[in-house]
Each structure stands twice: as structure tokens, then as C-alpha cells.
Length: 354
Image 1 (cartoon, one colour):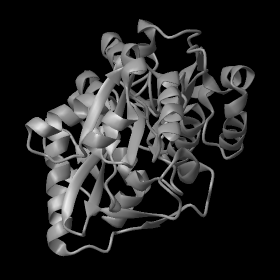
Image 2 (cartoon, helix red, strand yellow):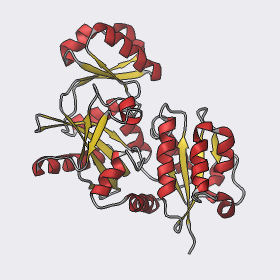
Image 3 (spheres, helix red, strand yellow):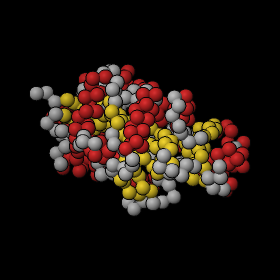
Image 4 (cartoon, helix red, strand yellow):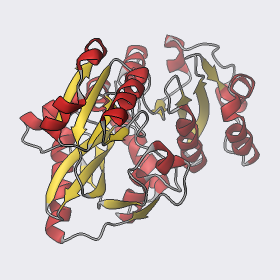
């Protein structure tokens, strides 16, 4: 029986380059080798694509350990199954791949740009399409659509870089409260996010956020539990059991997520009353449809006073490390193990087509 040829894309120009490599390693390690031929395709930090293990080893030092580990384990042996590989990304890539599996995190991979390229080439791909990816990546647009759909989220204000000299902590705090969060509008993994309590903190936070992009959002601080739910599907999506991130630091920062092993505990499933679980799952599915998602997404919430639900954000290519990432862990707790989850995502990509 002919195997399905999967191109796993990772790396990229985003500040989440290294996290993408970790997610891609877990994905490739867990794909069923009796069903799939796997071609690793790495994008370096300049945005150049490299096809296959040899090219990645010579051009992407950050991915070298991953490629060597996967080769040693017999996961990737692309020369026999793919023949002569392309030297650059182009329409002829459709001759090599049946399905693309993007494991990019952040800009130029999760924001609809890469999805549009795959559509132009006629290659089915895992995850949300162009519109859902773009909407999910922009926190400001996400919040406006959620508001219009009657889904509650933290109060926020949005500013462009051209307004940076007119943003006042006194004015912001009068509207949103003394404790606020400053975020780049279109980054993930808490990159560039600051928790602010003073004028001095605010100035530094604004400068840092604008160093990543030209639009920032400023949100009210909601003191509550951090709850996450995984969604899977195209026209008829399903929601997993929710899980909880118990943060032991000031907030769930980039460091707390990826560098500090003691910064947070994951409780899967979350210890919640049945009615709250039901509400979170229903709200996750509603948001998924409102934001035009397909394939998969992780939906993040705050739960205040154990009764009030606020949708924080949605991730259309959530973290995929088998060890620490909530998206696959929540599905495993809901009865769908990691390898079967990958099978389902690929089936959804093929059934949707391009």
C-alpha cells in the first residue's frame, strides 16, 4: 500500500523558531512510519527553506540535534522515498508531497502567509486556512470578533507604533486598572508580553512590545485560573476535556513555558464542576467557528471566581511537544493518543483539500 508523503515544515523567521523545532521533532517522531514517508523541511531565520536532513544539517545549526536524533531512530530516511529533492520552495513541491504539516509558531508560518502559499501550490495542509490563521494570530481582530459574537474577553485597548508617544499609563490605568498586560498584537508563546504595575514598567513594556511589531494591545489584568481546551475538526469540530495551568511565577511567560521547569504545573483534566467544563467546551467550539478555524486550535481562558469565563486567545498551531504541550495532552486525556491525533489531523487536511 502506497504511503502518504508528509512534509513537516518548521523553524522560520519568528521569535518562536526554536520552539517550532521542538514541536516538529515530536510530530516526526510520532508519525506512523508504516503509513507515512516523512520529509523534514526547515526554514532558517532568514526565511530560506531547506529540504531534507542533509540540507537542514548544513544550514540550520539549531535543528542539527533534532535531525541527528531522528536519523538515529530511523524516523527519516527521505532519499529512498522522495528521490531528488527540490532546492527551493515552488509549485513543483506538489509533486513530492501529499500533505504539508506546518509546525511553525508565530509570524510567517501561523499567520496565514504560509497557508496562502500552500493553497497556491495546491498542497493540502494541516490546520486552519488563510483566514482562520490570520484572524487567530491577531489578538486585536480576535477580540473584536469575539465581542461581536457575545463571547467575553478581557477589556483591551489597541495602539499602532505611530501612537507610541501619546500612550499614557495614567490614561490607560484609569480605563483598565493599575495592573495591566502589554502585548505585541500578533506573537505567541508570551513573547514580548509584560505585566505592568507602574509608569516605569509601562514605558519599558511599550518599548519591548513595539520592538517586535507595529501594533500592541493593552489588556486589563484578570485574576483567575488559567484553563485551556483543545478543539479538533473541520465542519463538525469536537472539544477536549479542559486542563489547567497552575502558574507558580508572576505570570505564564515565555520563560515559564519553556525554560523554567518549576514555573508551572499542568492539571489534566482540570478540577472543575461539570457545568463549567460544559461551558468551556461549548465556548471553545463557538469561538472556533466564529474565528473561521479548521483542523485544530487550542483555546485559552481565564476563570475568575470559579464562575466567570473570559476567553484569552486562540492558537491555530499550538505547541506540539509530547512532553509539555497542552494541545496533545488534553486529547490524550480525552481518549485520543498522540499518534492517533496526528492521523486525524492528516485525514482532516486531505478531506478539506485545497
